[in-house]
Amino acid sequence: MSGLYTRFVAGVVFPLQERLKHHSTVADLSALEASQWWDRSRILDLQLQRLRALLVHAGARVPYYRELFARCGFDPAAVRSVADLARLPLLDKPTIRAHTDALKAEGAVGLARFNTGGSSGEPLIFYIGRERVSRDVAAKWRATRWWGVDIGDPEVVVWGSPIELKAQDRMRGLRDALMRTELLSAFEMSPERLDHFVARIRARRPAMLFGYPSSLSMIAAHAAARGVRLDDLGVKVAFVTSERLYPEQRAAIERAFACPVANGYGGRDAGFIAHQCPAGSLHITAEDIVLETVDAEGRAVPAGQPGEIVVTHLATGEFPFIRYRTGDVGVLSDAACACGRGLPVLAEVQGRTTDFVVAADGTVMHGLALVYVLRDLPGVQHFRIVQESLALTRIELVATPAQDAARDAAVVAAFRRRLGAGVEVRIEPVEAIARERSGKYRYVQSRVAAGPALAASEPQNSHSTLNPS
Image 1 (cartoon, one colour):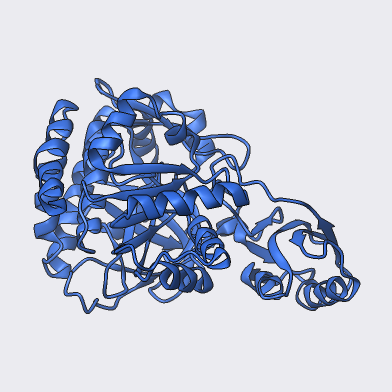
Image 2: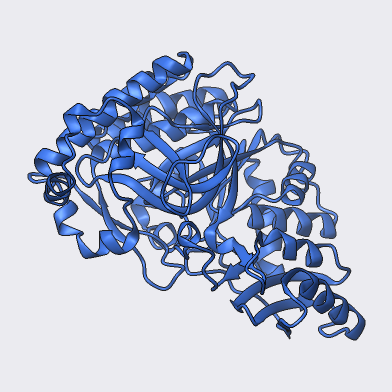
């Protein structure tokens, strides 16, 4: 019966909703499900055709790019390779803020206003057209089907974005009921709320989970501590996104729910960039996304080496995102995936540029070097590391006992071995650590710039559900 209802939602209800919203999602899904099996060269040929069309359109109808192309002597019709993008400057958030109106295509209709979570203190306001929405939803729909689940299967979403949480009006509630989606607020993770979450998940018996890795792993740990089973519910997959997925989080979620964890990468601004397939590869949505990794000077770095992720979204003609700096650091792969899909592979997303810390001698290291000091200490429940300057790093610590002289001295010594003997390491006992305005949880925040390619930037904020409005 569940299968029949899912087929009804995926085949009738959701397509009707998309048609009423003038979205081409169903046709886009059909095209994407065919193109994923093409060989790599054919997919990249399609990508180049779409890139050239976007650039020609931007040069003709988008005031900002018309002026930029003229100033750079850039002829979009002459583009013969993705590498030609390197002749254009990178697009960053300050530029979008300064030229928002000029980035809108002349004659654009149906633009929707969006914004990022604004974790850095200033949200980014931008606009998305119907083509972009349709393509992103279709790409996400394709990825969920890789795991044997579909729109209409029971789903529990643990999310914290104010955009989704504030949108739970009567119509949204009706739609979620039809789609069998239940939203739980990741902003409220007290023991009492966690008891409620565990009870709701048991009652819902979802085929899929969706949420932040920190939230799902916290629910998993809480259920284990309460002696409540979650491995008998028939969950097929747990989709996680928006934060770095740590190995211990993956293990905890898989153990608790007896299901695989599928990592996703994307943003409300940058789009649906990549998703993990059952064979383990993080596949880039190459039909819609050109993904570059660049060094501190904005030059392309080869596969296998880390660089800042820069995205060109090919369905953003109404408000183009061309060479957009995500602020994330990642590694491209040139390997083929065992699943047989020709889609390129993103080998690793190492985290936000602000997840990197800088030692007193200028050495740049990933924040994991500090996370590992704290994560396995007895009594440590939650923590946040804030590098205020080269001379000061603070640790907000939720632990039992709140203060332990031997433990704290060991932590300070370990941090100084990594950051420098003269660095002040200040441990601040707290009762709780609040999530950011975007709803995410970040273990490390550095306010020390680590070079041009690692400049501080706002965190990505992925779409919250399988059925975005």
